Length: 175
Image (cartoon, rainbow, N blue to C red; front, side, top):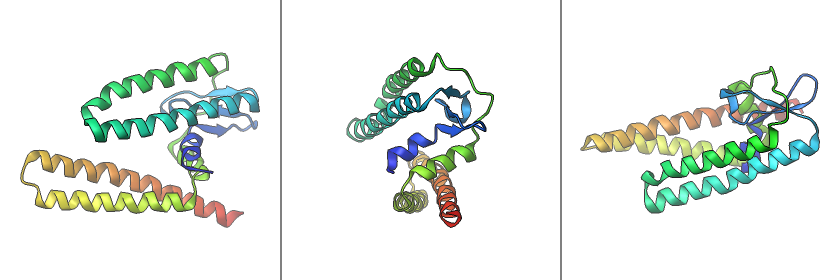
């Protein structure tokens, strides 16, 4: 499995009766019970395609044109995801089960490659160290804000990825 499979897995879980539940908004929303494997494959394909297009586009536009362009992109991609996923699952019943943060991270860990998780973890730690360095040499409030933002964001990423590494390791021991 690859990086985008891991991201996609975070939006799905198996219910107690064995059916697959899709959570388009993750832990923030209700899940839809998918009736069969064909429906699951269709929804997974849409979510994976969404991530494959959205993430590189946002990164490239932000690097080339600046963060100000991220807001219109967020609206465009948000609308695409909302209407696209809604069209696929609107006819399916809601699930009473909630998706917890732990379940989402565990499902994501299953889809990620161990090497990729470690690589992401190392880069998160390096960006936190970079943020600390920027805070140390900051000469303006803007630089300090950049430093704090980097420390908080990449620190949170590092914690989440560290948890996924722990889950992945536990799953390997259990196999």
